[in-house]
Amino acid sequence: MLKRTSVLVFVLMLGMVGSAFVVHAQQHTELTLRPIEEVRDYYFEYAAQHGWQKLSDALRQNAMSAVISDGTFVETASRLYTPRVIWAERMAAADYYFQDLEEAEQEFYADYYIDPAVGIAILALLRDTNLGHVQSSNVEFIVRDSSGKVFRDFDVWASCRAVTEQTVFGITLYDAVYDLFVFGDFSEAEYIELFVLVDGMVGRAEHRWNLK
Image (cartoon, rainbow, N blue to C red; front, side, top):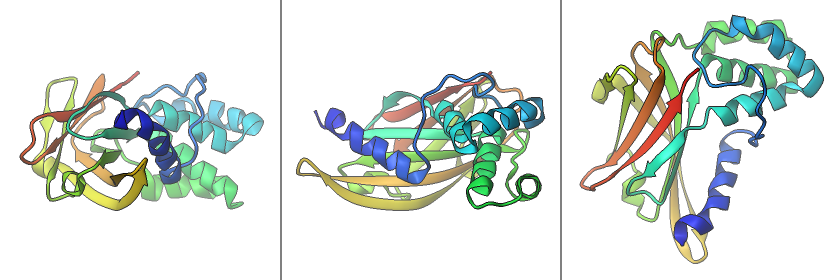
């Protein structure tokens, strides 16, 4: 019952972390770690017709993981930040603030681009009625790719961006937002899995991204 009633609030929280999600199946917005250059011209054409924010929203929506299990948590969600997702976000931000797009693109490659051969970035959100279950001292993030390689401990850098408290139908819920960076070569990965464990608890959250 709690999971069902908290879905709407959790979705609203995702919207606060980023922009609202737009569920559109657009050509060239599939989830992939392939280079931006392959679709750059299409993205500019699409943005000219529909706007940069709509392009960014579509890419971000497709970058949301499939949640196989929430484990011990009330609810979980995560997004994989591919080079195309980050590029579109930066271009949308530049457009919003009337920044030169060519300059914004240069800044992207200088300051924001993540080579999949070096690592990947993930945004993870955890929700539970127990504050301790979402705190960094009790949470472990593990990543596995399609080759079977497991990334954990020093391979995964995790930073808790924020922990917020709210009451839903009289029940106190704690939401934690984590930025993850996973060091490793994912350039040939066909899928990526994220596992979230809580110290002392049986069960784990399992998320998956299938890559094109």
